[in-house]
Each structure stands twice: as structure tokens, then as C-alpha cells.
Image (cartoon, rainbow, N blue to C red):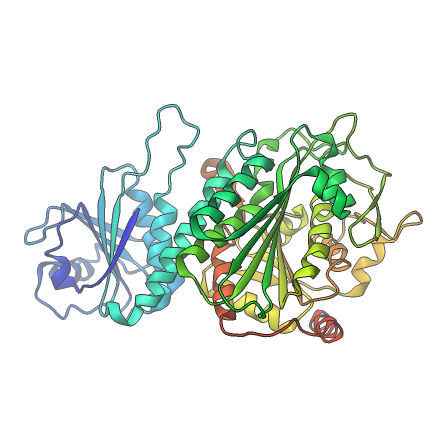
Length: 501
């Protein structure tokens, strides 16, 4: 889908030839012009046929003096990014069944960067159509979207960022929606290689022999029950000098999760194809970086495999030796995500990162705690946590910080290894984070649990592409902040002080 950004007021919008003209109306709208569109809005508001409440719509067909075939007025409340996104999503969603190919969106006077981003990403999200595995695909009808604001030059950068974010989010959604017999670990490696070839990233894809040689015993054990060979994917975006410490993104890539020997119930098990949402978000973020080309260094690490039950699968009671040398007692094979991530987190040390963020559909407990609104966020460094919170708010892809008190790790003690992979039911998301924390001691670290936000179920079932928007905003805020990772002890102390507040 092609996006265009231009200076456009309501008078100019009346002359725009398009299938649909979408006019976003906020509270306190005042008609300053005598053009046909301004008069229509003023009359509709006066008659109370249109309310500026978020999502309220009024349609007009071929109104006199307007070049558009249809005009849609949609309310956006106070005009904030969140309200504009809701308005645009509602309107664009209503147009999906139409044959509209060109859409012009006019944002209210005074709209800022947040509204521009919301309009772009909201339109892309609502118009997305999955067709990859359909025999008679009927794809997205909408081909071109024009975003009009009072002064395009002022918000050109915001538009460019938004368009790039939309590209990355859609890339992640498409990967997430692919069925598990398509989106295998091998396929993820191939997608990474394609990105590298097309955009100049450094890419290395390792198989079972290389992973065994490195010593990733925990990761390798999870993959033992599957006929699909594991892949460990390393991507490098080098936009800054070689001496600048990179940010490392680690994405969980379980391309299908049966639960292993601790097998899951059959209901909704098909949704376990989304267990590679963390991996998809890392690949989607790199796709967006290719558009923006910021001056920073980023490494992506993706441990990818299936979790299947067969005669060679790992079992409850097994003791695994991780890359860090720590031994792990397996009490539940359905807590496999942390077992592949722990080796990737140890591997991340070799890059001497300024920060590491892992992204994983890790626990059902996080879904219970936060639902599908916010991703769970854990961090050992207050500055890193604040940056992720701010990035999520700016991207309308929010997260929420949860505690990491040392007491939460008590249940992971075992008589037979250094640590168990699960504890009791209480505080499951926090306990999982405390497990990962053992392997992330030597750099500022954050963990995003996206189990509730990576996909939707029910009638709207599908990947969301989250948290690509959050990750991209976070990375762009790091541009120009060169320097090595924070000292280990200072980072750990900062994390404890916030957890106990």
C-alpha cells in the first residue's frame, strides 16, 4: 500500500479526486471556511447527525462540490493519537468490504506527530488482509492513502517513521499468521537471509551442529522432539561506528508449541503457531530499520525451533546444561520458551551490548494480569525501563512494568540442579522473568512478555505485529547515544530499587 503525505485543508480536500474522503473531526470543531466540506461538517454537527466522539461516523455519497465519490466524517474526541487511531481504524475497517482504492484522510488543524502516526498505522492495520495460503485470494483493495495535514513539512519525519513502522508491523503480522507447516524454523532463517540480502544486514543462520558446538544445551534440548531442525539466527544492523555498543533484541521463535511431553489441551492449540511472535517482531523491527537507516548498531538473536513430543523429546526431570554453564531441572516441558531464551541471552554477552531486550510470548499468567492491552515489561535498569515505557506510549503499543523482587525466585530452587524451569502457579510471569534474569546479569536487560498482545483470538483472530512499534520507537531514541553497557552492579541495584518501591 502506497502512502503519500501532503499539506491539505478542508477546502483543498474538496478538490481531491478519490474513492473516499475521510475527514477526522475533533471536539470543538469550528468551520472557518465556506468550502463544501467545511459546510457539511458544520451542518452535521449543528443537526447532531455527527458527534465528535471517537468512532462515531457519518457517510455522504457524491455530495455537491466534492470530487470524492464518498465522504466519511469520523469523530476523534480530543484529537490525541489514541483517539485518532481509534477513529481511523473504525472508518478504515468499515471500508474493507468496499472497492475503494484511493483514500484521502484529512487530519484536524493542529494535529501533531502522534496523530500522523496514528493515521498511518491505524489505516495499515485495519486494511490488512491475509491471503498467503488461500486458493482464491482476495487481497487488500485499498492501494493508495493520502494523509493531509495543515503543514506537511513540519511533520515529515513523523510520517516517515510511521510509514516505516507500518511496513515492519505488517511484515511481522504476515510471518505470525503463516501456518506452522509454512513458518518453520528453516523458513524464519530464510526470511532473515532475504532481509539481509535486500537491505545489507549481516546475517548468520546456524543449525543443530553449530548450536551443539557452541554449547547451547538448553536450546538444543527443546528441539529434540521435532523433525524440523532448529535454527539460531543472528542479524546485524550496523548503522553506527564499529566501536559503538549495540542494542541486542532477542526474539523467542517457537514456531509451534504442543507443550512437549507436558502436552497442552487441544482447545485453541492452533494458536500456538503464534508462539514465534517474539521472533516475528525482531524481524519486523529490522524490516523497519531498513526503511529508516538510523545511526545506531542493532543485533537480533532468534532461537527458533518447535516443541514437539516424540521418543527423543526432552522430559520432566531432565537436567539440561545451558550455554552459561548453569544446570536446569525441567519440571514442565511447556515452559520451553525460557529454555531457548536463556542460551540466547548468554550468547548476547559476546556483543558487549549497551542493553538487551528479549521479546517472548512467554506466560499465560501475563495474559491474566494484563490482558491484550499492555505487554508485560520487566527490567534490571530504571533508565531502560523508562525508555521502553515512553516508547510504548509514543507508538500506541504500551507496556507495563512489573516487579522483580528476589523473593519471586524462591520457587525455582531445586535439589537436583542450579535452577528449576518453573515454580508454582502464583506470579507466573514474574517467576519466568526471574528465571531469565539469571542469564542476563552482565548488561542492562529488559524482558517483554507479549503473550497477551502478540495475537488476537476469536472472530478477529490473527497476529497483531506487536511490539514492533514499541521496539522501533525505543531504538530510534537510542540514536546518537553511543557508549558501552552500564556497569553490572549499578544496573542490578537500579532494578531492585524500582521493584521494591
